Image (cartoon, rainbow, N blue to C red):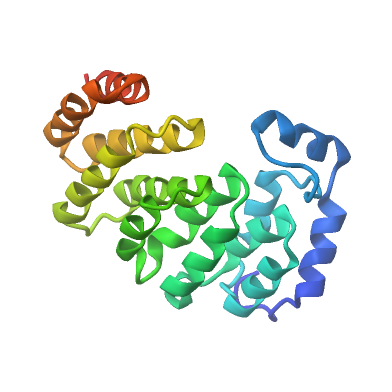
Length: 219
């Protein structure tokens, strides 16, 4: 509970091991999450465990270092965004091996970090699958959560998304599509998103599909 004594990494890992279910671990593959380095703890249980607990940057670092999927998920849920640096974000992103940890970090931690706006442009030019996805997962999260942000960062994000629109890897295409839709739907930039769709549509099959998705969402 909030205000209680700080947990040790060992205590957090004991909780994870106790909450693990083999059927849950086996089911991860259906969602495109590698199960070989996972315990099988339901996401809802991890969110519930972290809710109300004090943020703990040192505990998050130790859990991330454990390397297992659920330990890293807990790290993203328990870390203190105010203490998350650009260097830490870069290090974590480089280690992402599935879409779920990528999106959890983007939506529950990185989107409140002080350097959050500096990272999409860095990650978007990477050819690494989950580094590039992270750029657009973060843009998507910022469109939903960063209520005080001006338009300039989102317009710059649309330019990054235009360059990535031809990436036909599904985990990139989905993030690009969702980011552009979120910018159009939640930031009052619907016309900018529709203009984006018109610009990318001729660029190939993947870009045309994303353009259709954006138009449908903004109809």
